Length: 114
Length: 114
Picture 1 (cartoon, rainbow over the protein chains, first blue to last red):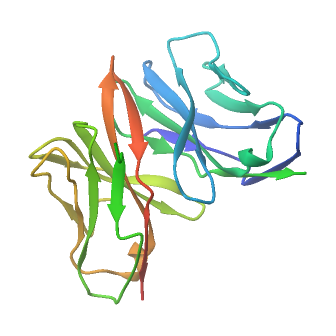
Picture 2: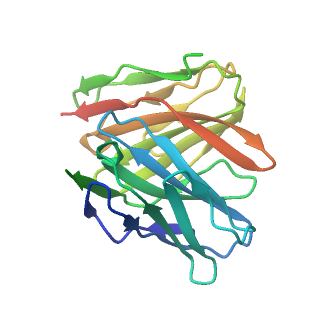
């Protein structure tokens, strides 16, 4: 069974600085997708970034980028120039190609200090 | 578009009571899912549907029933509520582009079973 592990229950960073959230996963599949979701206090789940396993290039969305290490089964999220609005729970998630089922990690609560 | 809507937002049940959590989407998505979110465990898939009339079990299906009579609606039924079902429930709908599912989440329902 696929598993996703986020080993940092909580992280904090000063506003305008950079923070990296860690995620590792376990799978025997070769085609899969990895996601980072943000959940602010409103509870709404918001897709931050997505990475296709077959792509070697790391995905980037504005201030958010990932470090995808396929051999190490690692998928970290880097947030640059942290803003107060980035404070939220962040979930790493995995799905195999052709399946709509997401497997989530336990989440990391990110606090931004002004 | 309203996106994915869920009702109610909050609910308190007594052990043994039954209820239905409603989920509707207006994006004409074929795929819909139910997840539960518990502290420290991320989101876990309960049931999912790949189209009207077709449903399947996820990771934690026990105690829940679903049906999909229309594309728009995907209700989740608790037949006899138990305290272990206290959780936040999320409905999601998704569409597939080249095997990648873009999931849209509803705002969630917080359920407490006493």
